[in-house]
Amino acid sequence: MTTAATTTRSNSDKRCDGDGCDAAHPWPLHHIRYRGGVRRFCTSCVLKSHAGSFCVICFAVLDAVPAPAIAHCSKCPSASHISCLPHPNLASRFLCHCCRNPDSFSYYPAGEVPIESLEAETRTIDTESAKALVAASKLSVASMKRAAACARVEAERKVKDAIIARTKAKDMLERAALISHKESEKVHGANDSNNKLRTPMAAAVNPEKKMKAPNSNSPSSNEGSKPMAAEQRRIHSREREKWMRMHEPISTEHGLPQGTTDRRKSKAPSLAGAEATVAAADANNPVKIAPFSSKQKRIEREVKKTRLFGSMEGDADAKNY
Image 1: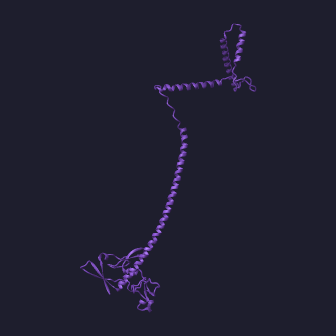
Image 2 (image 1 turned 60 degrees about the vertical axis):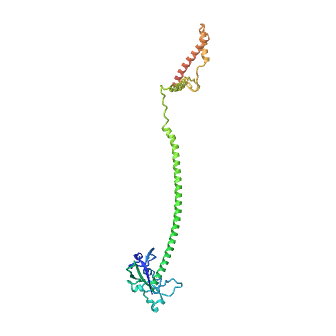
């Protein structure tokens, strides 16, 4: 029994990805998972790549449970039902068709009958070729199911890896942000401390510039000269007081050599001594004395003399001491 099948030339232009396949116009092409990738094989290459998964005589897929009695080829993994063998007694010496004709054998020898009036090719499929096509289709479906399962497992694994990587990346980013925040706090603290130290140093190294003297021609110069003159007078008065204190007479005490003075106590001549001196001079001189005002002036002159001579003696004693 033969069946005619019509295919377009666009399909016949596709090539088989099988190793060593020389089919010029393979039809149909099956998708299978082969060596880690999805490839397109012709019917014969699908069956050859799945040797041992079907019976090479009846083309039944060997997926029944329990598995029937089978015999394996003495040269390759191909299998066959023992009941399908022409001589079951010779099962140990069974040899498959591929091993008998390794160069020219094909499980799907579909004939080509070109039709000149139509842009198509007519392929004749007999019963054996139809069984081979069905077996190749079942094996292709099973292969793609396994490929889908493997792809699903691989996708789940990658999803888990992505979740783990995302968690690690998030932790690393948080840690980096924390470290960056700490470093910025350290830098700000160091800058603040440096600014605090730099402020007094800058004030010591770069003191404030003195104010420029106002211009005498300006109207405000006269106003500013008054406080300055008063300040100068105060400075001169303080200097004069210091000079006077340094030249005050110092009396002698017990424990110091004779002729020396003690600088800790001021022994200026008293007013009573000056009055006594003036009274003695009046007693010795019976001449008429001037009024009270003249007497007061004489007392002041005696006080000044005593202070002057006393300060000179005190300086000499200090030098000798």
